[in-house]
Length: 312
Image 1: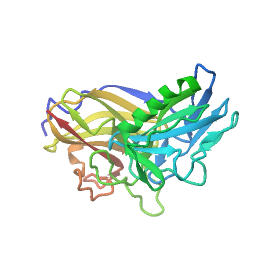
Image 2: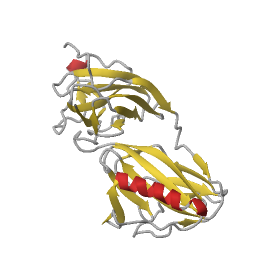
Image 3: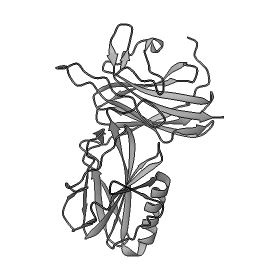
Image 4: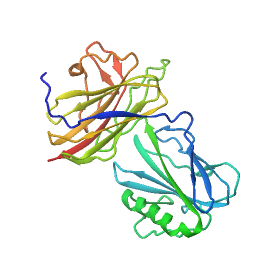
C-alpha cells in the first residue's frame, strides 16, 4: 500500500521519563520554608485500582488534590471531599493519601494529571462550578486546573506549595473513542500475563498545525510501535521504541493533513519484530470486537488504541 506523504504527525524526538519504581518523588519548597515531597506509590495503575500517593512535609499542612483528565475535560477534587474532610497532616511523618477509608480510582485507560497543593493554612475552595458525585466534587478539568492555580495565588502569604505529576492508567476499557483505550489482549488460563501498552495525547481535538504530545509505553520490557490509522484506513508506523517496562516515553509533533478521525495505536512486541503493518487486524473507533491484534499467522500482540480528531 502506498504511503501518504502528509500524515497527522510530524514527530520530533523522544523524551524518556525515567521515573523508576515504585514512583518518583518531587520535593517542592516555598519562600516561607514549607518543604513537601510528593509521589505516586507507582507510576502505572490498572483500571479500577486504587490510586495512592505518598506525601511528607516539614510543617503541619493542609492537602488539596485534583485529578484532571485532559482528554475528556473531566476533573475530580480528590481531597478534601464530603466523604473525608480531614485533610490536615502533621509534620515530619510520611502519609498515604487518600486515606484507607475511601478510594480514588480511574475507570478508563489513559493519562491522569494530578495537581497537589499544600498549605500551612486552610484555603477556602470555590465549589460554584462543581457538581457533587458520590461524595466527590467533579467538574471540567479546565475549571479545576484554574482553581488549583487560584489556591496557590491566594495562599502566597500563607506558605503554600504546588506540584504536578502524571500517572498512567492501563487495562480494560471502552472502545477507542476520543480519549479512551481499547482492551488489552486476554491471556488464556495458565499462560503468562500479557504486556499492557498504553498511549494517550494531551488533547483529543486538534487543528492542522497544532502542537501535539503523545505519551506511551508498556509495563513489560520489549518494543512499542506507534501506528497511525488515518480516516481512509491508511496505516503508518510513526515510531518504534524499545521500552524498559518502567519508563514513560513522550514524543512531540504537529498535527497535519488529512483532517478527520484518526486512531493512534501503541502495539507491543517482545522481540521488536512487528511484521507488515498492513496485515495487522486493527479495530476501528467504536467497533472493537477483538481482544488484541491478530496477524495472519495468528500471533497476538497487545495494543492500546486512542482516538483523536483533526480539523482543517
